[in-house]
Image 1 (cartoon, one colour):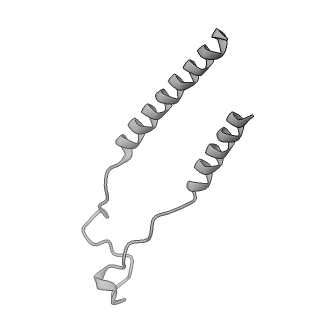
Image 2 (cartoon, one colour):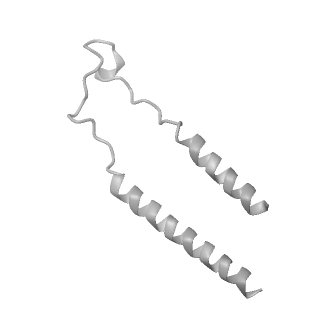
Length: 79
């Protein structure tokens, strides 16, 4: 029962944090309000390329969780 509660709490936390977003960047042109307001300073907008690293981290986390579940199942079968 405790495992089910932990699993549900983890799933709820994961689903609720998806809706959280980072703070918006400051307005371009020093925030003076001049210009269209939608211009991107520096070309494409920049940012860190986290896509590949994120999937690697998620995959490693899934493997680690699978390993833990496998070992827990083996301990239950031994008893």
